[in-house]
Length: 66
Length: 170
Image (cartoon, rainbow over all chains, first blue to last red; front, top):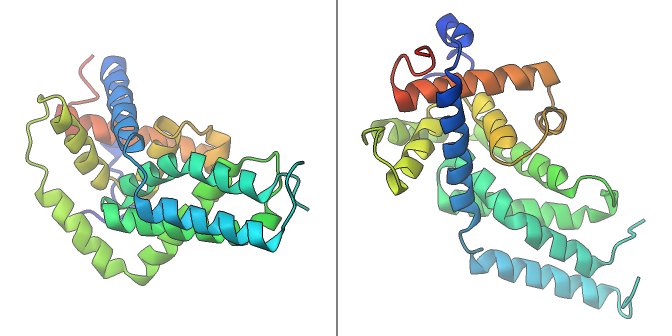
């Protein structure tokens, strides 16, 4: 494992990226991220949000409309 | 000072949760830890919602909270983080030409091999869809710094996933 900030060899900085490869990288990155985003939210987080909502509602009753 | 109702605020948190989880997981590579981070982020955001100005960027605000939490964990638990990264690097085994879920796994591993600052920059710009300006604010650095981190990250990803001359051969 390389240390952060020590990992920028000059040849990497100056390397022109093949636009085709760069496009593929961008595509893969988005696909990777989309896969993660499409995972269901785990119950513990949904439960937390439910609790927060209830807490807020009980603190401020009758705040029905804006 | 809130102009949206509390229910709205919680609903907005729910809307941002999937992308917060994706960001957290991409940064730390561990699902449980990612969800811990998201949970902590949502609690902090909720607790300080009065300080959030409606109309400004809730997504960027939440990402900033999560990113700061992770950075302080990195400082506290540096040794442990290095262990996690060590596991990552030992798993860079699948041939880059394979597609499908293997490609997803490749990206995860390749991201883990980037320095932290480059990893977060390329994720925020290239995957989360933030502007350079927003990322500069989230990471607390100059726009030019963000741009150079993103460029270096993409060049490194090209090398990791397409071989040593990944960027060069045109």
